[in-house]
Length: 301
Length: 216
Image (tube, rainbow over all chains, first blue to last red; front, side, top):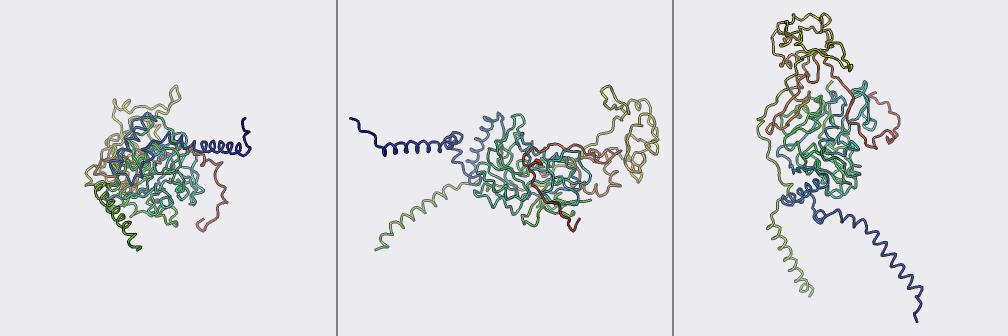
């Protein structure tokens, strides 16, 4: 004679089954996450905690991953600051005509997502006599320069007192010795605090994995700059450190047809940037916030 | 009583600390961030100025079957006959030169061209004749602030290296951007329209009307 199952036992079994099912379902993202993430990646340390050998390993892995996922052989360099060099940038608003060639050059140099036309530079069309950045139009689509307007290209100001760095809860972003604020894409958790903290709208979030075809990828990449970013991390202008820490001019300056952009070493008294700071009436954006930008603007007409 | 029971724990603590210290010293690992590149050396590479493109043809005023503007090479006529001394103004030019636009103040042809060799040499106000490629000095006679800024690196596009100890730099010439006969910088349609959905007018935040400020 089989004893009938008691109501209490049946409920317990049902509850346990449902509980186990719910637990398995709740853990599902973890399983798929573990599928994309190797143990090496999981155990990888912050860039600043990596010694040279460990970093070389990480770079080799990233290069292999780019070849596997994007079909392009790339070189990822670890470009370190140069002793006695502190970068500064100045922009002559009297010369800028708003052609957006700088934004385009940035797009190609830094392997941005093709679909969104992303760029670290936003050129704002402003009414002459006004200076409210919120009223600037970044999507103007008519021949430039337009009468009564001036053009204000805005990118990361590489502040000496960067709010984006102080809000980062995991120290995935920091300021380097030459003044450039960088992001460790492998350490960023994508909380976007920095994006909210930046008064210049200089940070961009990768809502999706940037899409770019193999033949359009710029293979000269920097670990802390233009290597292909993963989904869900924040990125920003790095003054093209993979170029500038090799002595080259940043891509946006090379693209500027008017010569409105002046880049150089603030510690070299004979540099072009020092000449501009000494002879032009320069100003910085939102000075009252105390961010101490090292991106300077001036009018000279 | 109590100190006796603590003693082994303290000893273990010492052991742990000394082991960690020994490990730390033994590793002596160098973090990547501690490395810096050596300071820039002497500026050994040159800054060169692009050779201006010489005008080799002029607008004929006519169009071809595809309604494209037709240009006529200078050589078409000037290989057979020497050019006459340039007249005072563009309006006085005859034949094919009629299509030449001139919007550069009240200047005369001979203000810049050397009448002795109008297509090859230029002439400063002082009467000094220079090859066409040295136009920088000629332009600077009137456009002093621009020439000053050019030499200071704050006017005119450039490519190459900011650090001249690592590589050379090339500067644009005045006439790369400014046609000497109509020097006003020609604008155009901007490139690279952002497609960021948060920048589209539909997402633009509603702002109160602009306030009149003391600065107008």
